[in-house]
Amino acid sequence: MGSVLQDTATGRSLWGVDLAMLTNSATGEGLFGALWANAQEQAADADTFRRAPLTRVRATALLAKPWWLPVLEGLDPYSEAVATLRKVTLAPEAVAPFPYDWRLSVAYNGAALARAARAHLTQWREKVAARPKWRAVGERPPQLMFVAHSMGGLVVLAALEQDPELAADTRAVVTVGTPFLGSAKAVLALNLLHTGAKPARLLRQVQAMAATLPGVHDLLPGYRCLDRGLDIERLTPADVARFGGDEYLAARSLGEHARHRESGFLLPGHRAIVGEAQATVQTLDEQERVGLAVALGRHHAFDVGDDGELVRDLATGIPARRDTYGDGTVHLPSSRARTNANIYVFGQHGTLMRHGEVLRQVRNIALERPQSPYLSGTSAGPGLETPCLGGTFGEPLTLHATGLHTPANVALTVRSVTTGRAGHPLTLRRDPDRADGALVARFIPDVPDLYRVVLDTGSHVPISQLVLVSPPDA
Image (spheres, helix red, strand yellow):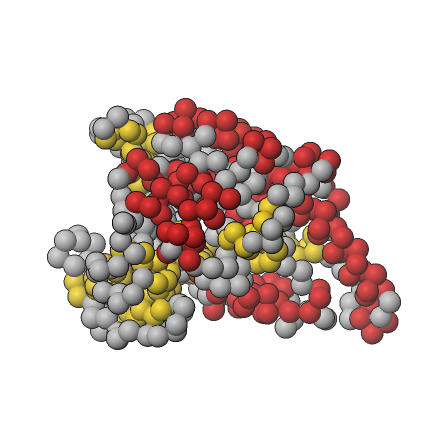
């Protein structure tokens, strides 16, 4: 969701520009409605793009300011990542940002990316050929390197699967927090209306929009995630519809997951940058409330043996549970599913592309320097937990720091994104209601706004997350 979207006919910005669509009931309702996918957009696939690209909404740029959505939480801009790469290329124009209409299917956007990447490579090769000094830099012809965050990694996968010649011209793919197996949070985003959570106005608009979008359904988990007690099942299209999604869109997405389980396609030169040690929803329980199916996120996963069967406790036969953690949105097995070349960082999903260690690793890969991962994928370390539904003005935000032995030398701060005004550092203390030894602090916002929460342990790159505080429902 990191691309700015615009209404093609009117030029009106629909996404990623004005936070009023999230905080102002007078402007937000119409803007969210404009993002709903119509029947043509829901049916669009790779062939649709090749025949006649859709034009009602267009992606104009990568996100240039922080953004936020309930459940999926904060998303930082990509400006620093683009600037980092432009510093290590022969010329800034060697780096081409690729915004896309994330509402549409991954397959459709994959076809769009394949065409854009081929055009970019052709133009760059012509430019290099015309400059003898550039040709002398190396004997190899120019190749592509993709750097993709979150859903962007799925779009790269689709593009290179669809175009084998493009894959052959690709030197490296770097995915950052990409949910190759999907994310259980996608179900929670489709289930917002059923939970009765607040702020109801914003949650109602987000769920109604998400239920129409192929892009959101393409994030559904394809692994066994629905806890039935003695068995753990994969989602079915009927399950998704019961939770508030669209059965047709779910069937297409889950069918793609099944195809990928059989496919041996590997991304060329793939390195995955993976966030770890953050509390992450990995599986789901189902409850019924007033006739509605409510999905409850659980912070554990289940192992599957080489024979495809669940690993079970030998004494009871109950499936063995294990917390794999992740980046707060994508659990570890999902983001590292397609490669063994993994680089781990302590960081939250939506802010990874602004994370200092992530930018350093991306720069090293671009320069073909050795990577130096210092985490293992099983590392215990600092984690940050913020309210995934945001907060309501007038009520305190409860913030948690996990994986720390003591609050000594640990700083937790909150700053307004729109004004830059910083609040006082918060006091962390042991949370008596948490068995994991988490530290807790509470912050009372003085105005509805988007806030950045930063956890700095002094020993690691600070971990940040964005939290929207909305006005109370009318």
